[in-house]
Length: 198
Image (cartoon, rainbow, N blue to C red):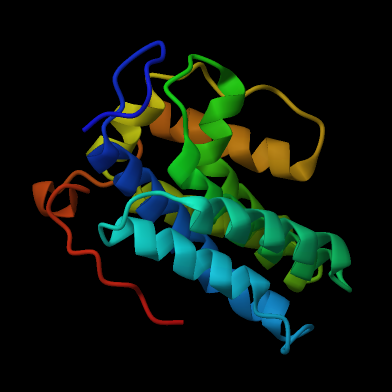
């Protein structure tokens, strides 16, 4: 099954690989948000919505609504680090709605969750850039061959002035130049849909 018509083919299986990657990148920084807002479930609900799609459910209003709610949580967040963590969660839920359109901004559906997660980790560590760079390195290693192949269908990430834009661009460039996992067993087509623990 493929997504709606666009500039190239994009299967539901590939969309699940993208959503898995986004959820795996965003989930580790959920505690950054929840430490500040322990009673606000919106970012965690967004991650759960992403995993629901990864596990085989059709993409639906669930992912859209959860993504929007997590982004509202980001606007309400009390610290910049919590704001970035919530944005990562919202982008993870929104990854299911990557469209097969040859626009650089669409690539954000693939990598922006990782970029916001890196920024959240950085801010939680008093803004130390090496922390964000380490998270980007982890995201690079997490990328499967299928994920990278999908990414390469899109134009490169745009240049931007914000730190999140810089982290997104760094990850995009690394993956296009050959970064990511190389083991066949790590392919998005062979891994089970189980959720990592936090």
